[in-house]
Image (cartoon, rainbow, N blue to C red):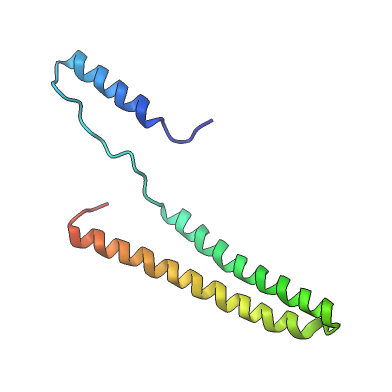
Length: 109
């Protein structure tokens, strides 16, 4: 089950409706979908959690190999958290830049 309608079928339907109504050319609609705020929030949460899990996995692996269980686990957990926050902030900065560019062009939501 698709959540988005097929763009080709929509264009064909618009063309048929335009012929029936007697219009020369169908109205073009923009079918490109932007990200909702919820999708952006989940992306940032996933980036943060992925960074932390990677740090925990690397730290635990090093601790098992070297026999020093809590040391590298704690250190790499903090590194993973820092990497996740850095990635999350980079994504937020990128999205803010896109919004500023869109506002400068005069395109509203």
